[in-house]
Length: 176
Image (cartoon, rainbow, N blue to C red; front, side, top):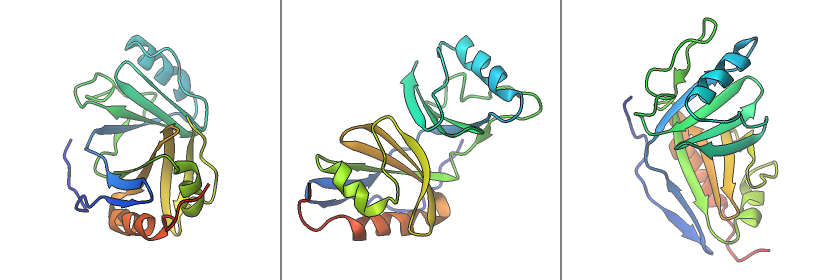
């Protein structure tokens, strides 16, 4: 897996909310359509993961982060050497896709995160939630691992525009 950064990490901080890029980590998209769901679940279980997250949820286990933005896809993030990321098998004719070069991860964190997210996302993002949404016209997958942290997965070709949109739309003053 390779990395081709499309934006320079220029953290922006406003009112205790910080926007920055995350370090690279391996990302695979597992297909869940048709009869692949059970096969993928068995594969992950063989590597110590007890269950798939529900649709619209995330969890971490065994050194991996699992994101389930919709019923047909599971995003698996973690170290490139993990067996679920390093050359996973085919599942009924579909192999997990390396999406590491497609998505740029942007992190937003700070104490007023919930209020700040209302300024940039059209839908609410609860802790433990994952959703497909947008930043203006830019498609993103958003995840919220904790009260004070959110991740946005932005297509690499839109990374700079997404970062600038976030930087320009963070609240100017403290909001509740």
